[in-house]
Length: 274
Image (cartoon, rainbow, N blue to C red; front, side):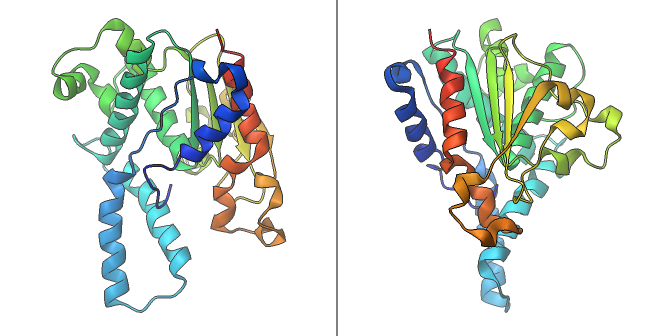
């Protein structure tokens, strides 16, 4: 969520690998980058505003424009063909195809930050609906065969389709998750999480109580309460000082440097080592 560079996950992956020790070379790590779909347009708007208007609080404005612009763009008119929602799901699927080509049976652990938690949750939820033969209203899982034909000029194998749908997902770690923002207006009976993709599946959700964009998930509904383990942390051990005990966008970006988060991701990968 927000202005993001293609190498946004490099430091995280290096820190996790350092913690894996002798099993590090058993792990294949990939990052999904869908910001290019959004950011060129956001830069255009930002440049126009800066050149043609007088505004203050540049850093905060830019965070709001890029961050909340992402959320609005991904949800707005998502049912139309070629929507941002669909294109972002396509980036997830392409990355999973790369992983499947390396080792089709590998267990998958997803790590998602901020808006990425909603994007990934929607992707897996749509995939599970499609696998159950239920209609999907938006995204690539509305017609995964048509997407594969347009993308790879062929149909997917059963193994690929299962893998792309999260069929081997053994773990999910979410940080600074803002799924509650997207479901809060719905009745509780309609707030339904993904189903556990595998018997090994474990979902840990890290949130900092001082981060207004990061939320616990268990209070949302009985389904979330049964599926998710919420863990409250002081992201990055309070390195940004007492000023961040009130709302500040910088607090939202500290999770991936936090020892507790990095240790948890490494522990989840170690338990899956062959």
